[in-house]
Length: 284
Image (cartoon, rainbow, N blue to C red; front, side):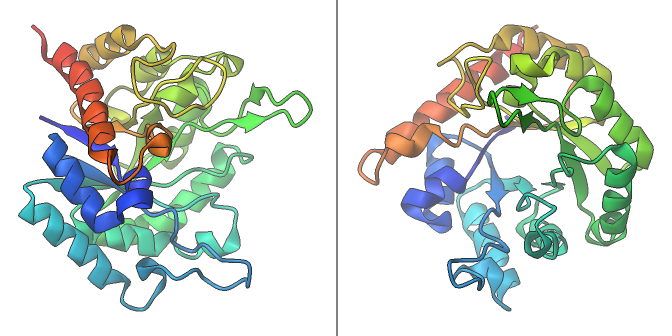
């Protein structure tokens, strides 16, 4: 099996260490190391109190790897902080790559700058790639979107459709820059694309996924099969390109209504939802 989920949502309830334990007990065999607190500042304009923001950041990454090892799962990928145009968060991107390496992950998802074209984002990624190669960690760019601030409808951004996505990858043309397809982003109607179109266009450059459901309008980040995305078509496209990566959930809003008493049920529901996707993918 190659089933994974982000740990950000469970960590809000349990903390990262226990979140990994619960994810393993639910049946997942990998976790996506969410680093959204890395480089985050508080009201005092100082870094918040968080292990990755201290000089002992690698000890924390090692600790999470040991917990994962003890529970029979691995870190398959990570998610660096964003937006990358934020100068403080930008300064921590190499730390995110380094923590990915120490945790055992093979891919670090780093957003492009939403408002830049392929050439400016190319320079951004080329600055990070030498360090990523030293760490043996691939960087995955992701399909993004913007909002029309008048109507609040989604509009195009970096990698927001299959043409822009491929253009960004080709501008760098390096095996260490790959694609993470956010299924929910691709299915929002205002972007005039689809997950299927992106899958076929990306081919073997597609090496990571963010799987979640929405109503085809909002970026809901909900559990698969709860809203409107047709996962059957997506699974068929993934089979057609012989996708070899993990099925990684990013349904990070689903656990919002859970607490410590019932979060294990919520995590098991997440596992069951992505297991359906994997089972369909593995059918002959």
